[in-house]
Image 1: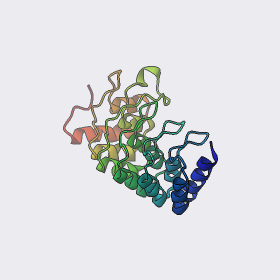
Image 2 (image 1 turned 135 degrees about the vertical axis):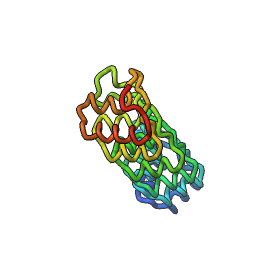
Image 3 (image 1 turned 90 degrees about the vertical axis):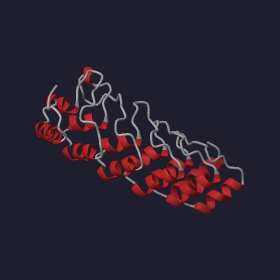
Length: 211
């Protein structure tokens, strides 16, 4: 990482917008990455410096550059639960459906982190509730493929997230590649209270409780 990149990342991490402009005027590469693959815009998004993110975007920085963890600025902002930053990035045109190597989008990450209001924010902006991830979690091998945020919430017994996702329109009958719906995932994981919630939601939606 060169001198300009080092200064650029420092300015971004501290929210120094004038320094960012000066470094750009001196020829700094706005999309240069530090040793862990983070761009200056990623660093600013992670730190919650809205003005710095807006400045970098205005100057031409790439909104979608992913760090070594395969997360974009929007994904890291969702992870650290910075709603104002997420709104800013969406307004700037960030991709709501950016995925990491397991297929997790910003909404999937927020749901997995139990950030209810963040999930609502992303869904309101149009994020896909049925995105499928192939992360391993602690599921048995045959259950590890093709799960949505609702499957994962059911597996861990996260009742509030289950209710939130369903209220936003998540499909109660979405199937894993092995054909399991969220209720079946909850039952197999012995999440009894969550299974009760899912049965109630299924009944309220006029569907059969079991296949």
